[in-house]
Length: 473
Image 1 (cartoon, rainbow, N blue to C red):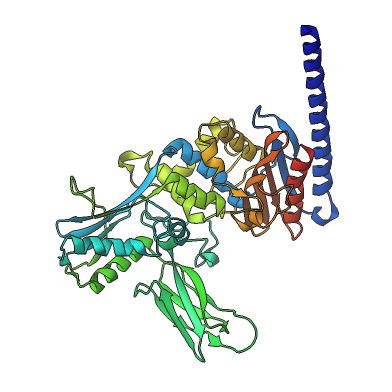
Image 2 (image 1 turned 90 degrees about the vertical axis):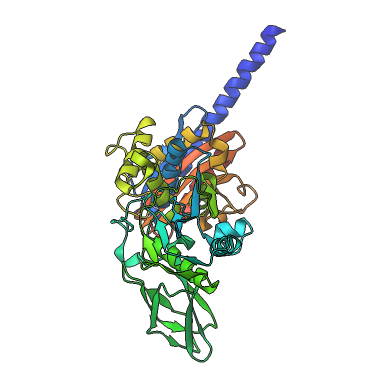
């Protein structure tokens, strides 16, 4: 009887092994067919599929080829954040009244005033500013000397040197500061009511807007808004047909932006600001045992969700600088070079070598100087999959056909694939990527597909590769 059981187990083992081998061979054939097809023959691919349970490569195409990963960089950044900050890390922005000054202590939180996060948490947009004025009124404060914004947890290199200078007015290329607010953007709202009108949301004197735009009764809206780097002078261009058009534009010096919004709100509430500087950006140590008037908090998981699921660039850069700050003297002046050095060290612990296997230049993937391979991204995912933080990390990824960034949410809607792909997409000019987890009948598999010299057929090719993983395995 015992021998029969052993015989059945051996047979079952070999049947499963044969099935797995057949599936792997079929997948390899499909991947090769897809990446060599005429429509994408000029594209550069790196493809890896791995079994995270044993780390073995199941199928691949040029897996060691280093390519620009676009937003797939965020997988590396968030993985490093879990190592250096810990899954229970919290960003706390504290507001104090100390010796007559209103002090805002920045923590590098990228989600302070973030509209999407506030909506998820059931908060009104800009509620933080009202919370501060309400706290002042509750404390019976009639006047303050200065509003001091302390953003010195980070250095004051606010603009990443490798980001396209002509795109620094776009919402996806904001300045990165120790105090961030509303994604470090302002909404320029314009409309056509027979003549062009425009304002800002929130309303503030922090920016100056002029217009070279015009109204039209035909065609579409072509409105756009310029902002020369390191200024807050904005100019509207194009034509406006609609009654209302919203344009999200980055601002210069986010800490002073938040300070100005608070100052304007304080004055509206009848609280005077008497200091000669009014709004000052300066380093202020935590004021001893003084209890904060208000504290605004977001967890690392909150930040990772907006980073991986929604591809919010500011979150990744704040993570890089926070990693630096929390591993430097006195926890201040977090910077890109030091933070990226620590992220590189994280990858080296996984067995990858800087320059040979990767080059890092930013945290979000907007820089074209980042270079990684699909094998490296699978290695990062395999490491996370087998870590205590696996569930938390996977919960931050977009879900195929369900939610998250458009390249993941809008595709994989068929019943065979819907909900079975947890992934991070990546897109910049000439680059498309997708990396994550496929949940198949035989278990979970990590995958990474990076395409450079991408064309209009590249995203379809990536999707077909991912579908083939589920079909074959």
